[in-house]
Length: 472
Image (cartoon, rainbow, N blue to C red; front, side, top):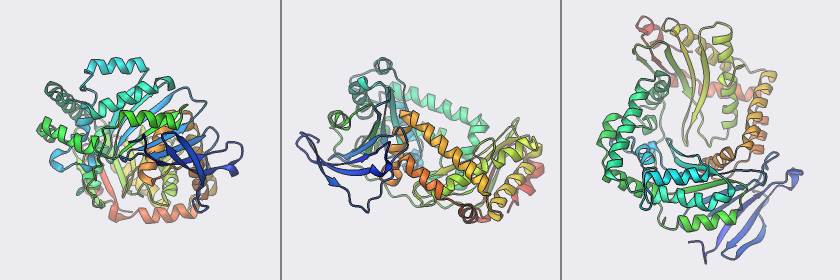
């Protein structure tokens, strides 16, 4: 796959002292080394990164695996992520939860290692090893020392490619997942977010819970797990992202050897764009504190105005000085917790305001959240408030550079959604371009009664009529 083969490697060279020297190199990679072919054309725009970011390389192997590395000479650790372009969104309804089930099984033994052996190997590497399943991708990730890279990459390959799905382990993990689903059902502060997605995208797999349901998890067989894993995980589009004090060529050699059995690419079925709907869903469960999610449509991950979307969300509910927190908690004392967040996917998104309050105050809190949304439509954010929010986001971005995991994750997500590396400096430049007028126009575009969605967990029968008729 790699030996005796030729690849083009894209190298992003970043000058910390002179941003004007930032450039993109095109390299010819063979088994004997790299040869500089020249600069990429001038129409390929590259924005370097801020202090602390150095060099990012990308190579596509002949089996389709995309290898991304960021060399960080000053880093003491290295973070490795194996990203699988399969998530709960790509499941059939009758198999809902199978991707998350497979994630559990990847840690339960392979053809050469028992579950205990895996734990011992992870402990020897310093760990931690973990995994997660999202709606559009899944990931196995490990943090260790650079000297352990030659052991860490083969371990991740072993888990992904050679898990055995022993019948006893399958049944054991089935019970664990059923307990996880039950725990979620009894955790209204977590359940409310899944409930919102189900209500906002009722006709799309994007709205289904990642865990699936007790019914679907009980129905999934061992044979189905193996077949699904073979198609969507082993013979799939993989991205391997590594950040730390490592060399790209070194990582290529290790990935080539460890993942050589990946020989085909699974083409995921194209998903229909999910259409948000106007809806109100009141779950009358008896809870100590009512849980509220009120949201509207938001921009997709690759939308050119997504940076304005980030700022709009931050103004609304992105911190203790945000409008939601100040209005609901600091000024009125109606809530303990209030914030907003973006749920952005490849072709759709939502901006959700969350709050928890006593059941008696639900309609009042909902009205106040609506008022904050409406104010964003009617009045432009002041230049001072926008500057403060922008600085907060930029500071968080720069602080994320201290983490090899954050860098590894950012490389992978940039590749998944933009098809190229998006450095922090580029994000900061795009944030700096956003004006108060941009935010107001975006708020008017996103916030309409047609996509207004409200979900409440709590006994609010006495307020149901008012809640069912919410509008701007």
